[in-house]
Image 1 (spheres, rainbow, N blue to C red):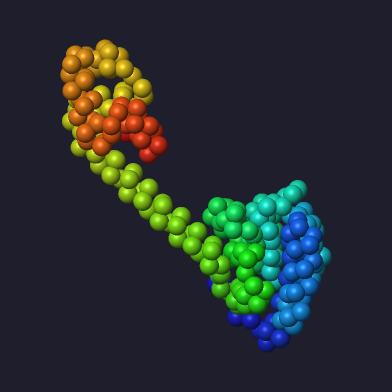
Image 2: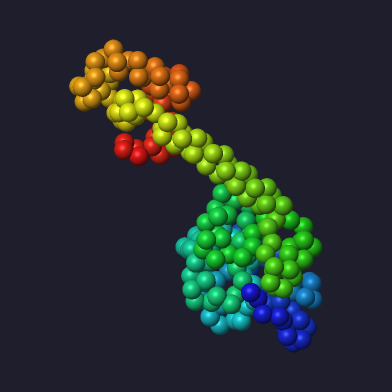
Length: 232
């Protein structure tokens, strides 16, 4: 939990390091943010290595950092910052196209995630909230996070449903299933299980019906995608 700010901390500007490999964006944003008396840009960097060098010599409260940078990217820099400079809050600042790295950035130690399409006034407000101890997700990042959680939930439901179906199989069906998902032919399965090919064909038909698949290939692919393995 973030400690309450002292009176001196509330009065002085928030010290920010801005890191982005685009010099035009970096300089323009530094100038615009610096116009607000509550924000002090104490340094700018073009890559993660420069960020780490800056924080060694210039006290900072927040690093506003792009994800995709040369030499040392934002996620790896955040991971190092979390270990060596944990008191400095790292805010990922990136284009919408790389929000797939959101979970990776948070795992590395980022506290918030802002997108470059935000108006400057919203970036300033976000920095103030972050400095006060809150976490901030830009609207588009929030949408992405919710979509990801929804997708994970749906995947979990599919996985659990598949597992329940596997558990409900008879001994014969299960034996055929475990060899079928490895790509064995009916003849091979018959030899491996000591069932007749006719019995194997019957079990395969039953399995396709149980799992709602139109072919043995579809069944094998879906089983592999969900993570089924022999003997599971």
